[in-house]
Image (tube, rainbow, N blue to C red; front, side, top):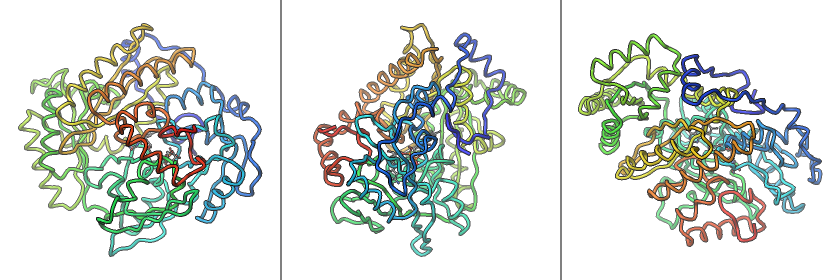
Length: 534
Ligand SMILES: Cc1cc2nc3c(=O)[nH]c(=O)nc-3n(C[C@H](O)[C@H](O)[C@H](O)COP(=O)(O)OP(=O)(O)OC[C@H]3O[C@@H](n4cnc5c(N)ncnc54)[C@H](O)[C@@H]3O)c2cc1C
């Protein structure tokens, strides 16, 4: 069962091992012991619904509260510290296209605002019902979760948009296929959410990001149905799929998508390597990308993330032995870890592995073929649960990400690390930050930061600390010519920074498209960008 507050399944935990706790208290000083708001506290805040009745809509306070936020820091402070003060006025669970069409008509007639809801895993405020747009209705898509049809000749599958990662993979795997899209939120996030937020899976280098996997589909808008045929490639003007990708619920509801699928691969393995420092590791990553070698993923952790990963493994003896071994080869505190994977047919993966190994050697790296790669695979969806434990220990853990050209990545990384280290000096607080490169391209890569700071006993102050960091970092990203988001989207949190990336003319184009498909502005208003009347 999904947690009401925090991330993930209620029965899954990621305890922080003793050495890691000690490390944190040595770094930060003792964290405060803070109490979370109880579910009852939250439910008491749910006001009377203002929606007109409809047989498909529930106004049950628990349902409304469960759909009121996603997973951003704002969302966490609201739900964990009990600051949440806006809720959808109702929730509905469509099971068919007809249901979706009926609900859109109901909203048009009664003046309700619609917030499409997939897995609720947004980390940038996509799902918050804004008080100025009420009454609002959350449309939970998770009952539209079937693989409708597999076309074996075309290697495509028609899948309903509310299918979560495990639900759609199970249905495809039963027929010998996979979509191969594995974001870290895979357990809960849905196909529709992935498409409209332009999500990226961990093995995108082999399977492709969500964009090339999305071959066509059906978007139901207040102006009617937008049908996207699944044509292999077309030169017939602009590609309408591009408009749906990244639309963040503003055009209406994606009800199904035709996805490019693959046969379940013959082989899939993950391995590790250590480089003496970040610079050597980055050079190796760049070479892997520019020679377009057959890896499925290639994730380079900086020195701090490498250290944190080793501490969190809870394998004290093994780690100490490994460190001694690496020291003998001259790899000390600056060492960085690469986790890479190979997916596909045996012959191709053997070749890829050989080529990667030669790059590792060329850049003074040491390959480790056992334990670490498997451990990464085992824990790939478990790591986010660490955020729950950290919060309860008195810390907020959040992330931000961008992608930039190789030519500026190194300077960007160094500058942002420096910014973060001093971001909370004004309140005498420290920030612990680390980063990795996780998605590589011939012309650049994504750089993903994780940072931790102590929560304050005043939740508003906890949020202020987060806001200071978000603004500082977002401006740096733009200064270095990166994107405000490589994979999480815009939502509310990145809205102030979008215009710089898109330009005023680009923003006008986006606004006009919303006006065309949703002239009354009833679909997820206040997210992605502000319309003139919002
Ligand atoms: C622990 C964790 C790990 C994450 N890891 C990754 C990662 O590895 N890669 C990555 O890309 N992202 C990641 N994310 C971010 C998030 O999972 C993605 O943005 C994901 O695509 C959101 O999907 P969802 O189904 O949960 O959508 P939701 O969060 O429910 O909604 C997101 C947006 O999509 C809209 N929407 C949802 N479904 C539909 C639909 N059918 N039609 C129209 N609009 C719709 C909503 O209105 C909202 O604007 C992570 C988040 C968490 C919490």
